[in-house]
Amino acid sequence: MTTEAVRPKEEEYSGQFNWSVWKKVFSFAGPYKRHLRRLVGVALIVAATDVVTPLVTRGVIDDAVQNRDEAQLWFWAIIYAILALISCVCFWTLIRLAGKVSTGVAHDIRRDGFRRLQELSFSYYDHRPVGWLVTRLTSDCDRLSRITAWGAVDLVWGGCTLIGVSTVMLFLDWKLALYVLAVIPPMVWLSIFFQKRLLATSRKVRKVNSTITAAYSESIMGVRTTKTLVREEENLHEFGGITHDMFGASVRNAILASMYFPLILSVCGFGGAMALWMGGVDVMAKLPTSMSIGTLILFISCARIFMFPIHELSRLFAEAQAVQAAAERVTGLLETEPEIKDSPEVRSAIETRNESGPQAGVAIDGQAEKIETVEFRKVSFAYKEGKDVLKDFNLTVKPGQTIAFVGPTGGGKTTIISLLCRFYEPTSGEILIDGVEYRRRSLHWLQSNLGIVLQTPHLFSGTIRENIRYGNLQANDGQVEWAGKIVNAHEFITEFEDGYDTEIGEGGTKLSMGQKQLVSFARAILADPQIFVMDEATSSVDTETERLIQNGLAKILAGRISFVIAHRLSTIRSADRILVIRDGRVIEEGTHSELIRLKGEYYELYTNQFTEQRQEEILAGKTQQ
Picture (cartoon, rainbow, N blue to C red):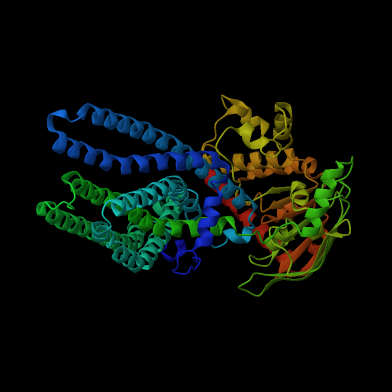
């Protein structure tokens, strides 16, 4: 693990408050409009009780001062009790409704984010670590969901409380009210001053947090490699550099926030102090026009109440800066368009087909279900940052034919397979299926007709049965076991105590590499693909497993268009055609016998590998003796 390895290129955003981002975020609250309306209504009631409470306090004091023993204190006590009961019910309702909205928004964002990750092309994942992506649908998502609910509550309650309290003060004594309201301009200036700085540090914190999550993920996934190479200390040192960046960014953000809140409260306190001073002088003058003691205490209470919504709104404002950084990242993911997707013409054709209903013997894109030919016509491909890795490649394959690719690493073998599967698309040339350029067909239709077995199989947590059924979710238990028998996996599976219901652990850790490969073969064959692809599927298994796979290949490949990338050349001797690929070009082509007679590069590869294999067998025999 290196520090740079887990630092993907980040999107760049402006330092301004981005209203378009917030509009997209709050669009997720659309399905919960009814709850939001109730939230707003309850927040208004809470704001009203906050405004009425100082008026009740004023009434109690003035009544007690003016009427003494005849004061109707029981009346004011009942009003206080009613206000307290209303506040209690309102707070309970706010917590319940905000919880529903927050949880619902988090659910919807994660659902849409996961759907987008499923849709994105392979190229999107080329430079983005797993942890970097996970952060967007975990901590970033949590921040967004909280602010959509509680942010709306604080905004409505705080805004309405400020308006209500200001109106009461202005109505009772507009001159004294102006002393309290005079704090608003400096607070606005402070907010503008801190806004850009808080937003910049918050973005830095979220960016480094993604790096840390990516580093955690990479370290856990590569723990075996780390221990075998004794890399613990080096990894710890490199991770320390990342956490140091996180520490610095977090401290800067915390310092700004710790300065912002006290300054806001100090300004508010100054307004209250001015009200107390000027109002006290007025009361002590005892003029006919002087305010009552109750009114002075009301002003002091209003000044104190004035602080709370100001504090909450300033906290919300500072939090919004941090959340915008998360919002930009999440919306950036959700708005990322797959590089490989159906064209508008194909989507229109699919919609038309769906409206008119399915037809027997017709695929989703309106073409015949039976694939008769796959043709590469002058296909070239280059990654964005490099030169061509495939040049003017031509090939035509029909059902029942097996095409094998051999050659040095980096020659272009896997690129051909990736283009066939439409994980990437040609930069020039065409790939045709039954004479139709495959970009004019449905991506779903193409990939649902593919069966792929990779060099390193990936299994999911669960049972063997569930992993095989992943190839066809509608398959019954009999079909699952049939697939296991076809690939010669049935025997080892039934040796487990729970058979096909054996739990295999995360990534299939309870199975050997060979057993995982056989399960992946069974999964692929259960999907009943018309095009079967094996990308060095036997290079990492033992000879016994390879023998089991070879025995089942005849059944697996029968009647299918098959492509095989082979490291062990003994596995492709029966292929209909063998293509030797070097530097993106076909340098030799023919059957095994033809290429051996040619005595070119394939002959050298085969004889060298055969010699090495014989030497290993001789050494193994001597060791056993």
